Image (cartoon, rainbow, N blue to C red; front, side):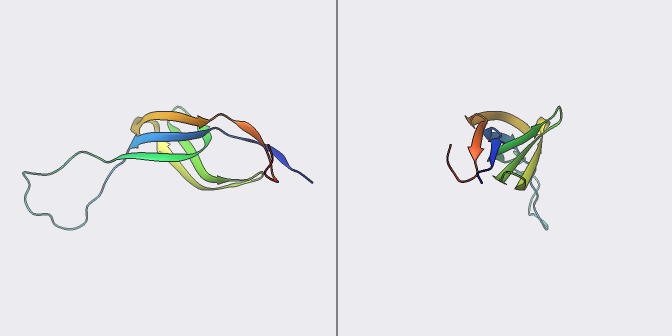
Length: 92
């Protein structure tokens, strides 16, 4: 039996991440304060006023490897593919 389900939109999110250094650092004058810019790709599970939730792996009844990014950290979201129907056996 073929199971059909709607795939969410596939996106790339450009966002600013926090960073952390461990231990004592020499000097206080030449400290790089720029946070890293990240790119994350995934299936767009949910978008609210405050956050975006992506997942790496998706199936008809579940998903795995989620990432929730606060909206204040997001610089852009680019669609790679719009939402579409998927047949579980791999045919569209």
